[in-house]
Image (cartoon, rainbow, N blue to C red; front, side, top):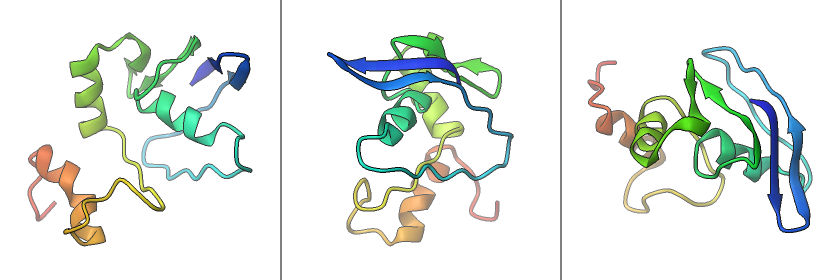
Length: 110
């Protein structure tokens, strides 16, 4: 993440944010309500576009991808664990986590 800004009208949710995360690293974003955590996650995962700056994941510039490219990136490279929503209610937590792995055709042994 390099010099990312995200604005919603007069509200500047992200201001000149830069972040490096090494491959295989687990990251937790913590902060008070309204501090920009969700905005940052949405920009990193390509669910939202920054007003300024760039996001690069595994040598791929996320901000340059079209919708198909963003879907593939989210399927193959980005994982989120949500606290309270975004899960398929009839599946267990483990099964929900496995959904993107099945979409990527990862074998159960892996």
